[in-house]
Image: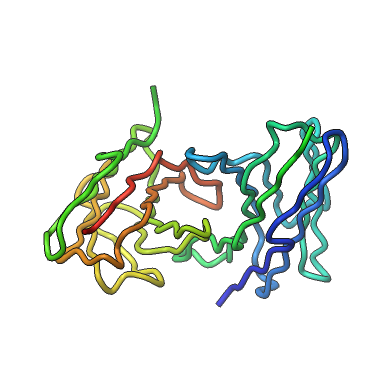
Length: 113
Length: 112
């Protein structure tokens, strides 16, 4: 079955710097890759997603890139702000109808001002 | 407001008790899921459903059961709670096809 590896597990940056979180997946047939942000004490929320027919997607300061050949995808946050501090999860979706998202183990991002 | 709701928000119970965690969504989503989130924040799939009367087991399903009698409702039952069940339980839903999940606010369960 699908397996998703996420790195790093923790990431500390200064306000204004960029942050990059990387995930690799094992099932080359997976074709949907969402990212979630979970602030302390709150529910995970979808922040951006990408499908396998697209190589990059941007939404303001957030972007996701997908390399299908290498089977990895990355979240890029530019001009980080303290409110970006949270746990970020990547996930991959195998195409089979009877499956659920497979999540990475999460990255704790700390942005210091 | 269309959303997904979990009750109770916090629960403390004794070992051996039977409990049901409630999850309801008002978005008309076909798919629903239960995840256990450990202190390290990792998400473990417990059960999921693709529609009424369909349920599937995830990685941590052996000590719990679910039912999907109505589209909007997906309760999780622990037949005999143990201290190892102490955790946060997150319910989620998604529309048909491959789409992102909407998560509920979670139930934080403590078994003493």
